[in-house]
Length: 423
Image (cartoon, rainbow, N blue to C red):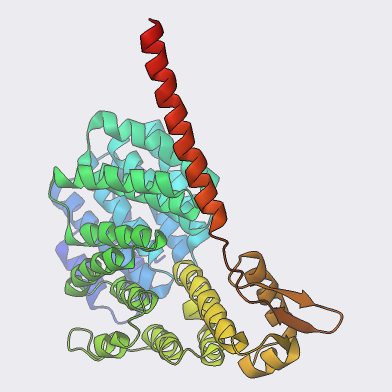
């Protein structure tokens, strides 16, 4: 920080913005903020200086300086309205969030702000920072802490009837329950978010997030057609805003197409004018590779796709879950097709035909036998699979059961009649 003192004037602000040396500009801006003047014009200039300084520190990647700035500004916050304080705090928190690998710093920063807002009794700001903290905890997989925070916050916000914040909190709660594999509660929270959203104007980005979460929950229930329509709505919203989430909406759209057996449509969607060149990249290449493997019913191509695009497929929990199910289905179909001509066949031969390790093929065959996908047994001593003919159901047993059922009805009817006569 420079020893020179710059007054809180427009000229000082212009001098800082025109400086080509970031360190010098930062020093001037700090000097403007620390100027003791508290006139209305000086306060306005200081607010502009804080915004400019936050942006500069973000570009320089100085996350710790941003954190310290927020602490230094606390005396200044007593001089300005609470609404402006909330705006400045959000600007600085957003600036820290844009610096990569600062998740832990953001969590500790939000906790500090929450404590400060409690001491200062700034309820409006505290609730928004707590919602931000819950989102960060969710990203860090601190599910129990996030759930405790949200459960208290949602009751408080419902009492105040702040619909817009309520939509955000309900959405977070839905995502949290989905991550914990509690689908009924995830759906209930999403329904609550939709109900609150219907009563107010919801920004397009927020509406896109609601549609994205709706699509994820429908896909989880294997309702891929409805899921596709929600993902499409989300993509339209995010695409118009040029939001980074658009690529994920598009990716899940393609996933739904693959899961309903319409893998041939994937190439058409990717090459459509709406998608264009802006979304081309590893995310879409991964889905195209999976679609190609599914169209050719090739497990080898499927495994190559999983290996080449591990980040895009395995590390995305939503895609990974559905592709695991798709892989199992594809493996079962291929095995059933291969063993159909045989009554007794070596497991090594099947493994060779399907181009997979013998151990994994044996494990899958035993699972299919237990699930009654086909009738057979494994002779592990000989390393063979013995396939039985499908046992024919003897018609006499259902017929006997039907006769007994009818006899029971006759006896009950006769008993009822005799009871009436005796009465």
